[in-house]
Amino acid sequence: MDITDTSGVLDEALERLHVAGPERLGRLTNHAPMVAEALVARGRPDAVHRWLDRYEERLEEFPAAVAPVTDADWTAALGDPRRAADWIAHFGRTLSEHDWRSVLATWWPRLLPGMYGGSTHPVIRVGHAVRALLRGDASEPRLTELAHGLGYWAARHHPLAGIIWFPGAPHAAAGLHAVPPIRDLAGGFPARLARVERLPVWAVDVTEPGTARDRLAELVRAATHRYATHGHGEATMLVHAATAPSAVLRTLPALPRALWAPSLHAAWAASAAVTAMYAPAEAVPYVPAGHVAAGELIERAVAHGDEHVIKFADTALDVAGEAGESGEGSESGEGSEGGEQAYAAVLRAIELGEPLA
Image 1 (spheres, rainbow, N blue to C red):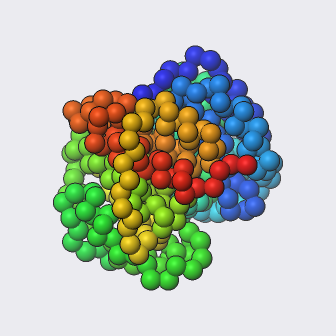
Image 2: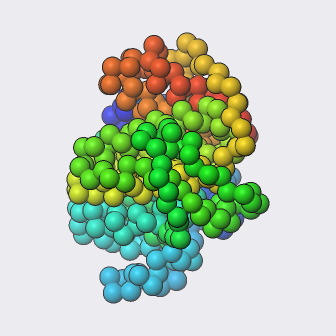
Image 3: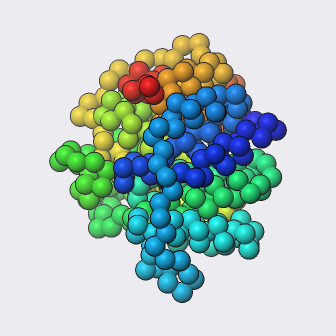
């Protein structure tokens, strides 16, 4: 359950973080704003600054500007990581002049095809920023965070092209199982993404907004559950098969309903592509989570400290909540098959991931 933040910790953390750039070492994402939002949303504002103190050495200074992005020439700057500061400044100006929902509605369909840039981290950062805005007042730090997320996405915008689509399966879990893995596993995300050639079709016929929302929730649930038996393919990167569509799902309430179905289709393509790039040759046996409460799950993730583990736990708690609302069990995940499987996936991520030093 998302908890309304009355502590002011999130705004404090965002102000602390906005002097840093969206990346470090020219390619690694700054996860700190996303983790801060996730911890506050899960009722752990007390852990935010302590975690930031541990992570702070990974932050780099805000990048230098090149030239202003304008309404007349923005297409030329799209996908140019050197222009990150320019894009963030552009969205900062735009959000100061227009309602944030209208800005999001304008730019979401422009950016959605390029959600692969930055290993899907930009759309995840936007999803956290939007959830914070939906949960509280549109404070200056939260609007600035949305500007940083959208700007990072625009700078790293990278579409997926040349895919051959083949008949898939009726359900998301079976669809992910049908994804053919790439043959050459050398290199990182960009190199592997270029080798994704074939993906199964799933939910392509969905056009009704409510159905799109339900199918997107199904996708997040399936990708989360799958990690419990397939996460060893790549402990960090396979998290994104769930957290990227989760970010899209969290953004839907702030978007016009006409954008919900296109968002579903883009999220499926991204989740399937990540699965193709990092799927292991074989699954491992499923290990049940046992009796684990929601508070204990997030506590274990915080103690582990890895940014992906914390964000994955955040997504898993959403999945458990969906299971409870559908009558599968309680919102905590206890007694819920869907929630228990999501919790098992997080425990697997904690087992596989490297703790934050």
